[in-house]
Amino acid sequence: MKFFITIIALLVCISAGAQRIVTGRVVDVAGDGLFGVTIQIKGTNVRTTADFDGNYKIAVEDESILVFTSIGYQTKEMIVGSQKIINMTMHPKLEVVMLIYNCFPPKYLNSSVIYGTRYNTLGAQLKIINTLPLRLDTGIYYATDTFSNHFTNAYLQRPFYLGGTTSLLTSVKVQQADFNKLQFHKYTLETSTFVPISKKLNINAGIELGHLNYDFSNQHGTRIGYGLILKENISLFKTSNFPMDVELKASLTNWNEFVEKQAGAGLYYNSFSLNGQYQWLGDYEEFTLSAGYRFYF
Image 1: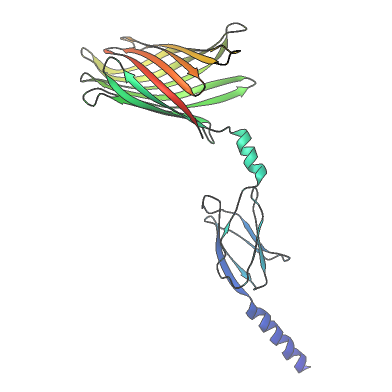
Image 2 (image 1 turned 45 degrees about the vertical axis):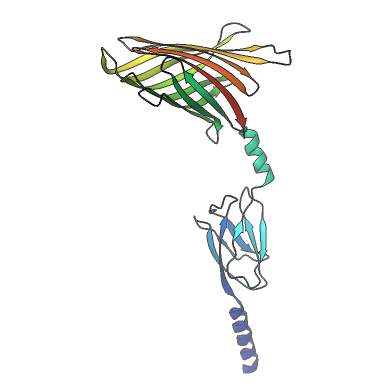
């Protein structure tokens, strides 16, 4: 009897001695740690979970097979063998990739060269459209004559869907101009929606609220303003080989002591664009011309 007990004890010791601890890290294709990935020994109930940094540890044998699983990712397997550290890269399932692609179309970038006719400024504008995952449009424009005249414009823009075909396009904009040793800083919030005028005509109409800090030749101070924005897109030559889109826009903003006026027109053909923009605000008056190209990526 003692003999059999001794044999069983030796077998238990040998079995226990064959187990060891394996460590590793689970990451995505970008190299970032994945939290919550399940690491299980195949054919058993022995399992563990990756921490916030993707790190894990588990007791295994040389013959063990580790199975890595996570929602939205392909299942991976790895034979332990003599390895002490087993790292794993998880790849998203194809259906997840297609879902993201269908829900969020590819974004693109507009780049333009801009010339200001009155202050002889030259600059560039970049617009990134439909940035994931928030569907944000972002843009920045800077122009200068390398001396006393500088102009900067930046914005964030996002659509909010209210149901059906109704949506509000909301923008936050910042403008700064230094011209002829004068200056202004303008911060505005705009929101607009399509207003049906007739069966063939829909105008994008909106309102604008803003804060203006200015230092002009005969006046300076801070003002709160409000205004009206109108935009219209017209498609030309739809049935020809050279379809074009024309965009017209105008806005009036009341800053109490004066009214700001803006008007512009743009011509778009395939990935090319030409634009003209007029702005009058107190002592500041400028007409800009721009030519741009759209890059898809």
